Image (cartoon, rainbow, N blue to C red; front, side):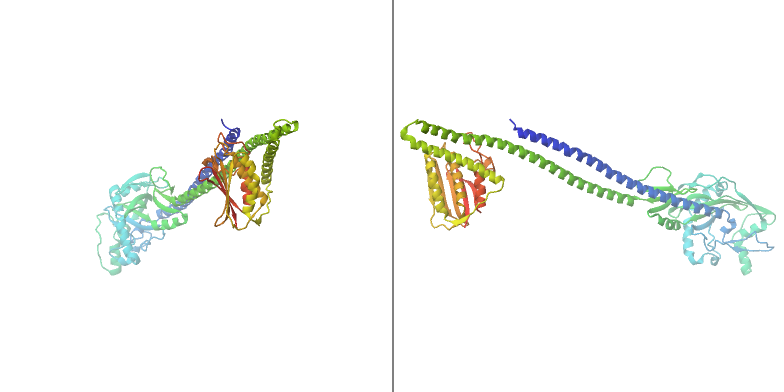
Length: 591
């Protein structure tokens, strides 16, 4: 059958668990959601910042590229040749000019201008094989390297034909590396220019004319099969500049090209955007930025923000993976901080709840013990009072054997002494609870005091059938002790020994006093049932008594008082099993 206080404690424990678990669970859910929400907001902030930055960069770059395309669209077609005849110059004879592009592009966004004729021959205005001094001689090697990279463009011009660019329109074009997109701003036909046939002839044979004018000699760098170019006019059709993605060396490049329909065939002119200039421009992005051909799919790549550059088949790609990693690390730090705080808070709440339950358990346990104490005290008081009343009435009424009157008187004295011990123990325990026990130890002869106390208690013990053995060593050093407290200690220890040996034949109580290395030792031993191992750790606690069915009645306060009185004198007490069986209590008084 469960004890009532246990049931109440179990209910209190259940309610405490609910009171702690519900708010802590809600705190955990809300806190976890809060950490996740902050992490999402941080990620969204990174994406938003990158998106705004990418759009801003793309718009600015698109504006610059459109302005560049517009200005280059107005460039005369003959500027793409290192030497050319300017038809706007009024001259009856021969005249040759050096291209304004001979020293390189004026705009840093342009890597190089180029021209491809109908035979697939690639020329750069910065290079002239016959007259190298007229080209960009300060970086001639770099220009030759660039010339080699641009040779792949001739495959597109040869396969597709520059006529494809004469009429502008978004369409797919085939290059030797795959598919490129042509993009522009409007659909319009080519511009038609009329030139004097002689001017066109001079443009075609610019190197020959230049050699004749400069050195006075004729040399033919190239024969043109163009009959009828000496009289009349010729038409030149110039298409719009269109953006393409074409291979430039080992990497794709953004190229603007236009078709040129001439009497000598269909030519292609254009320029290549400088990747290094764009990359320098993108350094202000504060992210890892790339300028590359746009992907045809719309699949979102984790850690990338793409912004299309309007009017071109290219886009700006911002790499935000590092920023996302930083937000992930920050989110992990926030989660660890929250879990640490949650663990501390939950632990504190759980500890507080357990303390409340423990206090209630102890309170209920103490109430139960006090209830048992009241019942035991009533029994302990009723028994000697009944004896006193019985023998008092016998003496008062002249009942019983008149020859045993003195025996009746001794029994009354014994019951009165027993009653006094019960009252003394209760009062002593009350003082302990009030922490008001005060002793006055003085140096004295401990052996003599033990002898006197034992002689006083011996008659009552022997009357009950117990044999007292006293072994006191001689020449013991003086120790500090309180005589009244020592009397109370011995009285309780001997009373316990007498009660717990009542069912033993030949019961003996041994009192021994001897000198130890640390002081003088006093022991009280019996040959009774001893103390069980389960009870030993609670032996000196209030209201603890032997749970054996044959154990005598008692209040469970004697050993509590003994321990406190021993400690109040600076001494020590311990329990051991007696050598022959039974209980052995040992006290050590320091010298």
